Length: 512
Length: 98
Image 1 (tube, rainbow over the protein chains, first blue to last red):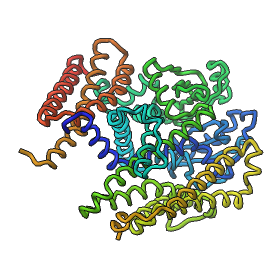
Image 2: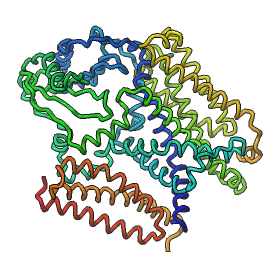
Image 3: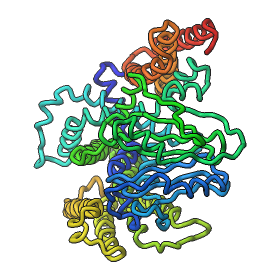
């Protein structure tokens, strides 16, 4: 649309970034945290800070749970077995009285008290891919827009910066802030480019059936069950409304281990428990492979005979490999930290892109009396420091709210969530009301809240750093505390730097 | 002649909405062709085409903003869209659905 290809890409890069940067930052920030979602779970639900026993419980331990679920009218009962990153059993089913989710002690199988939090896996992680807006899949689509935008930004960014690899070595820390911001944007952009491109593309590919439904609907004539059966081997059969007892679960798990050459099951699910047509399905673990393989054994529940065994075809396996690259469910701590750091690099990339837009227009907008800069600056503050403040508010609230907290019919877990949203909203208001001080003040808030979270964790659980860094099963707690303290340090240094910045006459006038 | 801002709005609609429709049509056609000709099992054809859809959409988005003539952009999108959707639906009809 512009006279040259480069100029067109420049226009596209600028406006995609300004319009979608806030959404993109939220997705990147929550995605970065999701790398450690189960560790955040341990931190936010202290009753689950348990050591993983060497022996797993016999599957028969859960027979009473399945029978209770069947009595409550559940159609699907699921248990996820414990592993290093989640050392508890996770039991779920939908009953007539609503959804049930329980964490069970890995030693005894007894239910642990409700931690009253959505924590990492049920708030931060779903926020990353759905913004927790489930109605009509709106959240998924918005995240999809952000993902496509990131791909567009990656390609157009490379086109704009033709001298990208020489610029990678240019970092003019002593020069004007605008130059510094651009250098930081370029360095993080080049450094993270392969990761950012692949992480966005793989994220989109995970939800291909939502984003491009026509592609499966057309060849399958809209028959979802048939598609699922041929693609993932999903086995279903209708219930017959005739009661029948469940065969030995231990035998089924033993059979699964035998088929998988000794590898452990990852979860066990009973469909239509108690019915004569009930099905027990056992999924194979993928903690040692990148590919999130779909290897599921289906057993006839009353007899325990194997009904169906499925292995995905090559291209479906390739899709599961791409999904695995994104989800990083395999065990590799070094890679996990690299994902976390590259995620943060992505956050810096988006934030500096915003800052560069603001700094390049500040003078011109002030001269012309345009309102664009102050508006976008408030949006940037709320999107960048604001969501960090809100996340820390979520952690602090988690340590402050009593276990039986309830307000206006909302339980503890909902209250934590509302605190997150209210704090986030407040940071936008703060940014627009106090534009001159917003960056520095929110940096101070981050520092204070991060330290408060660490101190409150110590006071309420007794797991101070001396303890959490020496006991193996508290490693995730120590790790999270250290990251919080490092964040507090960075926020303090940023705040101090901002406080000592020479007042800029244009800036002062603009916000007057 | 359209004004500057309406041209931008039209281009945005063509790029985002039109590009999406064309990408979905081309990917669906790819899946249908691979399946109907027996090149791949149906599920494999769907997965491959679904993954390609994102790349097709990305290329269309970039092209939509690089193409200088708005008229050429819109007509190309309409033609490709109609042809890909029509061919995909037609082929499925021809083999009698699933």
